Length: 76
Image 1 (spheres, rainbow, N blue to C red):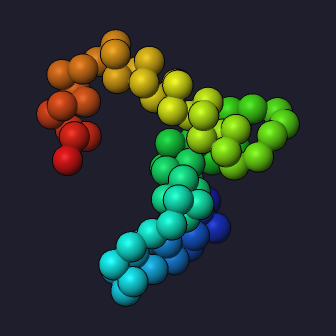
Image 2 (image 1 turned 135 degrees about the vertical axis):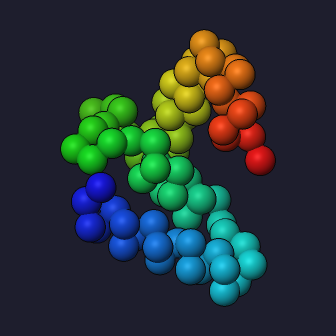
């Protein structure tokens, strides 16, 4: 993972620890940085909200294909 991604992720996680909360923007950026591989992208144009929508749809399709793995490893 690129260093800038790790730094941004750590910044957001530190904010969550110190504040006890995250706003929707920081949460979505955290999820995007974890779900989209370095150098990868989901859409050619749009903003972070468009990326959220596409990422949610793509993630949901993967969950539907592998529900047991999702339950075992990713459900909180």
